[in-house]
Length: 33
Image (tube, rainbow, N blue to C red; front, side):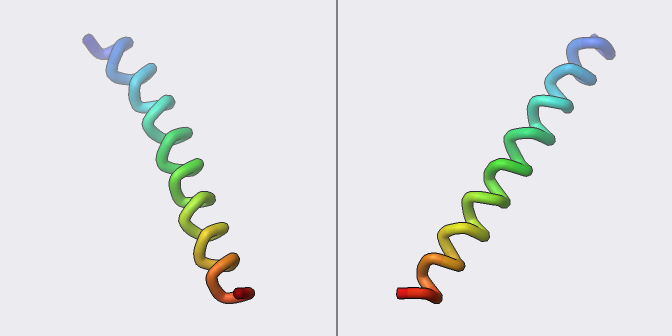
């Protein structure tokens, strides 16, 4: 269980980082419009 949790945690961190980048990108695009 601990190994599976660490693997899923790494995927979660990547997903969250991509999500944050997407939000920041969309906010910057809205400001330029």
